[in-house]
Each structure stands twice: as C-alpha cells, then as structure tokens.
Length: 464
Image 1 (cartoon, rainbow, N blue to C red):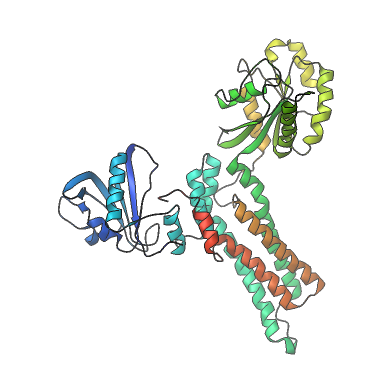
Image 2 (tube, rainbow, N blue to C red):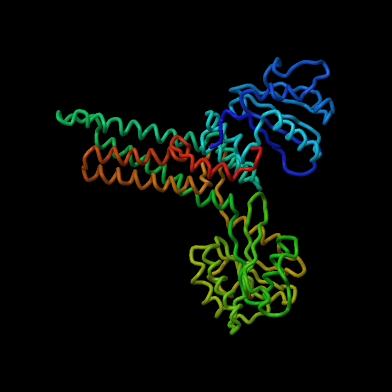
C-alpha cells in the first residue's frame, strides 16, 4: 500500500480538452501546499479560510500566471477522503492541467495511484468497502437502472443489511460461546429452537441477497440476447438496425457471419447485449462449422433468444429447424422474429401468426430492410426481461466478489442449521457462525487484506 501520509495529486476530470478541469490534492499539509502556488487578489491565504469554501485567484509559477482558477477547500474529517483536501478548478487546456499538476508535484505532492482517493476514504472510515466499489460502478453507470443500483449501494443500502446480519450472528455466537465457558455446569443460555429460527432467518436473508445477483449482474453488464437463425434470414441486418450502425457485414452470400458479433444497446434505461451469431445450416466448410458450434454455445449463455425466420421460408423447413433449436432454449425467453414481411401476403402472415410453431407464442413481424416492426420488437425485449420494480431501499447485488462471499456465507450458515438439527457441540457451531461473519465482513471491508484492497482500487481511474 502507498504511504498514507503523502500528499497525493491527480487530475480528476476525463483526459482531454474541456471547458474546465479539476486537479485534486489530499493529505495533511495539502492546503499549505496549495497556498504556495495560489495567489488571491486580496492577498488572503487558503489556510486561514473556512472549510467548504471556494476562492478565486491565480496559479503562479515563478511569477508567471498559469491560469485563473477557483479553489475549493475541505478540512478533515468533512471531506471525501476524510482528510484535508483541495480541488483546483481550472480551464480545460491539457497544457494548463499538466502545468498545475507538475507544479504541485515539484512542491512535494505525489501522483495518486488509481483509486487512491477512494481508498483513503475507505481507510479513514468515510465509507466501507462495498460503498467504495459502488463509486466505480456509479462512474461506469450507463443506464438509469445501473445508476440507481450504484447510488443505493453507495448510500449504504447493502452495507446496512450486512451490518444487521453480522449483529444477529454476533449475538448468536455470544450465547453459544457463553455456554462453552460454563460447559462443566451444563448451563444452556441459548434456547435451541430460538437459535434454529434465527439461523433460518439469517439463511433466508443471505440467500435472497445472493439470488439477487442474477438480476443485478444482468442490469449491470447487459441482458444477453442471442440473434439466431438460418443464413440470410436477416440477422445481421437486424443487428445493424437495432444498433443504428453498420456493425455486421450484410451480404446475399450465405455464411457471411462466421463468428459472433457483440454490442450493447440501451432501451428504456436497460442495457441489452446483442449477439449476432453464425447462420445455422448444414455445411462442409470447417470455419463456418466452428461458427455454428459457437452459435449454440451462445444460445446457452443468452437470457433472451431472437430466432429470425425468413417469412418466405417453407413452414415444414422451419418446423424441422426448430428440432435443432428448441432443446437449447429451455427456460429462456424465445421470440420468433419473422423477417421480410414486406414480401408476403397478408393472409400468409395471418397463417404464420396463428398456426406455425404454436409452442412459441411470442412472435413479431418485421422488415429489417425497410425498418418495419422494430419498435414492437424493442417493446417485446423490455417485456421479456421482466425485471421487477426496485426502489432506493431495495438491495440488489451487482458485484461478483460480493456474490462469491455471500455464497460462502450461505454455506456456513447452512452448516449451522444442520448442526443445530443434529445437536453438534457448541464449539463447532461457533466456528461456522464466525466463518459466516468473516465472509460478510469481507464484503464491507471489516475483514480485508492488502491484496484485496490493491485488486479493487487498481480498477479505478486515476483521480478517483
């Protein structure tokens, strides 16, 4: 870990030219450091100013003015990092940003490592580890749903639930261990029926949190949608239409797409990860065969399947193809997308709408070429997700590290319940309870190592 006594400095705004940029410094003595390069029109010093105030002036090097700036002063413990901090708002010239940063380093600051400001906030007790990770999620949020989940976690929704569970476990193990102290007297402080109820209640809460990861991960990384079908059914045209860009090559030649193409789209605040796959057909081409094998692998990974069917295709042929596809889509949302409806008669469309593949009731009629029916298709995608409404108080797990810790905690509390049923001794019960507490504490950082912290904060951007 870096020396926590250093004054750290970094540019906190995105790289490049902008209207303004922010250079941030933090650490004991950073206000005095800022004073050494800042000049106020009135001659006032930053060290004598009230905290949480903003001051106009210039940044000067060897009597040369680098820029006119606004300087915000924050004092410990009421700052993001929990220590004295200064933010210099300057014009967004790359030259100005780098000049100010270089000047601060020359005067004694050190360039911050990725995530070091947030890491100091964690070490100084301003937030726990799960809240610190949510800062990165908030910065990376690309939809209303991901923003809402990250904001809830950053405000401590997840942490509060874990603290509540750890408190119950602590009370639980305290009673068990008190019995161990009086083992010779055979005194029972904890009613076993009450303990069973408590263990079951904790198990249900941990299980619910772990189960929410499926939803949270889908919202965070995008709901995977596989676009499948025969060659030349219009899969790539549909992908390009939904993405509003020429992502995939479109050709009348069969077998153009030989591997999967993947990109994301935001529909009504939800991210969908669209995967265009190689067309399904019998072929002797080795490369195309590998692409078709990958198509079926993507079928297994996807939550939603868009099976694109050329509306002119013979019904018997489509039914025969369904025998290959349907075994791979069990438990998934399958939408039949009849493409090229601009070339079929109305009565033919009605037949496909009612009779063909009755076991797949969800179907949409489109013309990818002429941009017809895509609004209805997007509506069907939203309906297919079936994400429940969740508010600011709902806890949804979005982080794989948290999910793994919850799974470990769940196994530990299940062992406790099993031990209570089988009447095992209190020392074994206490061990499993403390193991459950350990994994829950690992999420919030009550239990942490330098390796875990380094791995988490290295993924942050510099300046945050």
